[in-house]
Length: 403
Figure (spheres, rainbow, N blue to C red):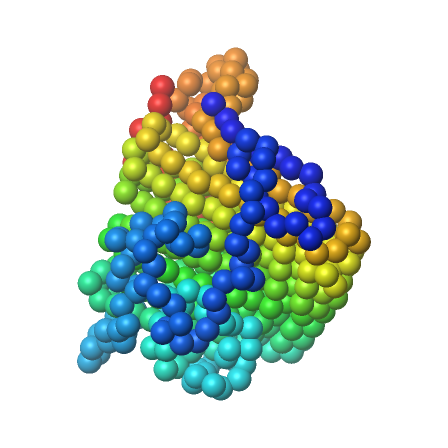
């Protein structure tokens, strides 16, 4: 059975989301949330707050502790290594050192704690006018689920530059992480965050980006590993003619909780945004949460925006929550809308494949792979795309598809 939401643009000035039955209900928008660098301005979530009510609070409690990173002599809580960095500028930024904080303000407790406890942020700069030949990869490896880690990464694409930055997460840790992305005028930047943690890892991350005039950002979130991964991207299309494409892919097994609360803010005129997140779930306690907020500001005339979330539930007991929100403050736009669908296998697709002599189990496998491959193919890094295709095959091999 499939439930779907496909709505026309919401009236200018409205703030609502669909309740799944065609009705719209008021919501607290992302712009109304507390924003502060001081952890004291945020209470420890109880799980009833609008931005925490879908999160397993008890499991993620470690990222609410006001604790410094558990680094030891010669043994970091999270090791990091940068490869492919020959063509970029690599450095660190202290708190208060520009451009750290130019486009980042914490809006929840883990983010504020990560800001407080990260003395030196990693700073990656694609220089003015430079086009990178290949991706720059930052490998982050956790060294113990019982060890608290905090981090802040600043990714800056200078004017008219072009490049791809990949953040790859593995190992075990309890990690509060901030990622700040600055896409200057005319730049073209792809940022990919891959979570392949061990099953006991906890990862709460806030990604905040600002896109300048005639610049482009592709932001991709891929979550396959970890006990709880809560990664919330926020993108501000600040400059005239700026564009962003936000893509997400997750495969949740029993015991895994993958969550993304996406915010796309059309601020400048003639901006374009496209959001597409897809997830597959297998296992009785597999869980995914997607909340998509789009704000078209009063000065964002000529905006073209669309967001969608699709989920494929492979086994009984798995659950996907999908909540699209749309706020429009001007009537002078090209178009805006959103869609959400969660369901099981498409019987017509299965029938089509089986009618051509493909066994049912193989047909189901092909449907899942085809469903997820759309996002994989948007990454634009061939080696990573091949790796993720293999990871999807491994996820399917480790699960039990219904017959």
